Length: 431
Image (cartoon, rainbow, N blue to C red):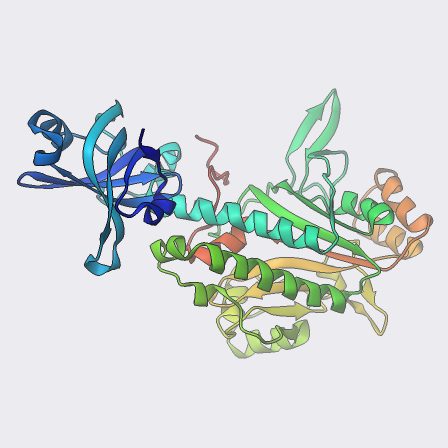
């Protein structure tokens, strides 16, 4: 019986007979030889199908195989020395499992709407598969790092009675004749967790109903959000730096081939052994004004401003001490300068902009009440949250990283819609 081999482990079977199961995504014939481009869930390689090995009938069948036909193929593994192509399979037997007549996605160029309407098929492509493998490992690396750092996973609800930052940009859901919302963040509930477990994190979907059409926004995205007791804003930024360096090293160590498919190298993904710079918000505004941007002090930099700033750095960096007025109600103000908050954004270099938002959470009960009122929110809705400051409040901090935004940077993708299996945007709910 032949050994069943996967693409990623083909080199282990050099000279041996194996069986592979997968799909044909390309075919080229030359006389009595067919070159089949084969893929499975772990990678891709080439299969040589020759008439003298298969027999004339099987070879003729082979020449008619269409893209995305599923097959089981037996053959002998050999090294392909041409252009460092790795290993290939010399086929001795080929069985078609599922035909694929008139597969709609062809090697020619297709527009984004065409491909997104067929996203259920588009994810089969070599590039999209590489992106999704990297996404999976990114989530795994983030969880692994946090667990090894002593964090406990803390699953927050998706349906919530209140919003983190008001309800303007939330999707409302009827919950047994009561208004509820799809969560925009697990943060507030995570803050409850730190009083029990000290260091917690959530990983799950978040929803924003903002009418944004930029290439870095989704209506449904996934975020990982750690919260830590006894940590101030500077310690929080230092932890974010370690977090980013660790998870990117994991991707660089485990996805060289996938990165190569995407035109990236592991060295581009690993972070340099230097501290991330901290740029004060005030200085960021000066840089932007000098560059011709008409940004007012007290406003959040937009997409273009962030991209400009991140193009001036060769490594991730922080913008720190945003004005209180452009941060969420729960952020701690700077005691030395109350008009600014102990809040930061981490931006990825190369024009990709913000990847993480974090900060020190307000720990004073009276201040938090005043901020809830100032933001026009209901005190009754946040009684449970205020209890966290009423009973044993402590200094604490946290942050949230968008999985899709980090995948976008790693894979050097122009639009964020390719970073998630089925994107949900302002005008897309299908498939």
